[in-house]
Image (tube, rainbow, N blue to C red; front, side):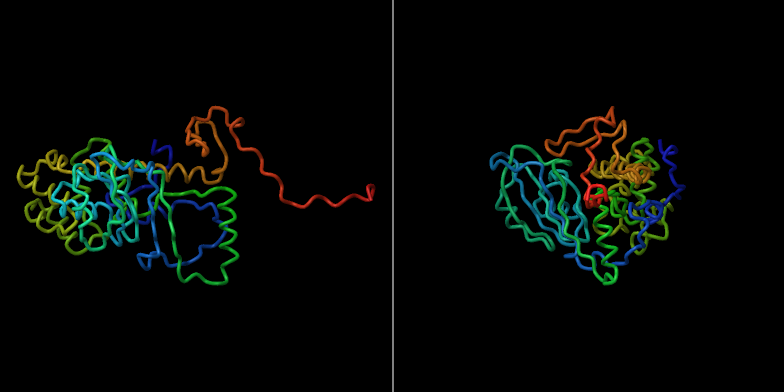
Length: 339
């Protein structure tokens, strides 16, 4: 499938930008507009839209958090440690950006709500607490609302900005998955492909080794130690926040380098995240091929009905095509014969 999509050649450690440099834009005829994004956390605000509202009763405590400058899993690990539970005990609907102010719901079963309310963790605020009857799981959300502030935009580009916005309103937004989906090294999709292929050594090698130009400091040192086979010291070198990496290195040290055992030390949700990254990579490739007819329904498409949320396969593109939009041009001037 990937060869049919003209997959670009990639190195063992992908460039964080190489994938995106090949993706076409819907408004490619307009020169790029320089701007600064995410200069401050408050410049990128994300609010999760839940798939359902908690009913107010049940054994699962649902609590909404606002986090600032933290990745979701880092926040989950901090909360789990403060509550004395495992990170896997905390349910979540999706991952949110790290360099941002984000609001999302989490859940935990059989926990005193007051213990959650009393949490005092830097850069995490408890916004609301209620109850529900089931654990929150990945996908239990309708979407996210974004407020994005761009800074340092040249004032003489306002006409181009309006043209871009008009095009997006008329034709739709080709919403590529962004760089953050693929990690600081741009290789999370490669890890996901290795997981799907059940290539356990490749998965472990990509997560723990293959040092490259995008690795620095303690992370670079940890990868170098792994590559040299010094798993014990590699476990000690990984900085805070790399819990799975530490567990994997310790398992390798304990089993004399058995990658299969290290593979099983990876958190299941993290494996799903890697697989999702590979799906996102494929989505970007497909969207790139459809960019010129993004607003045209084709046979085989999965169409979405906004009024009821139904999804169906398109077998007759002509029948499912949206009706033509009414013309907004002025009526023709009357001819001399009708004057």
